[in-house]
Length: 53
Image (cartoon, rainbow, N blue to C red):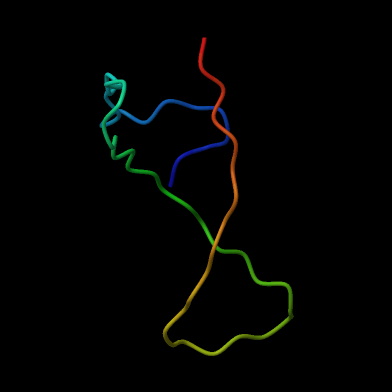
């Protein structure tokens, strides 16, 4: 797991190339919203905003 706002040892900066598709790998963690859960397959989606400087 990667702590919030913490750099993971395996992370590397990825240069972005204009006018081309850029693939940005990411990691996510799921957290239960109920007291009990069952193991199985999961589907999830996320929306995020990138800010370029």
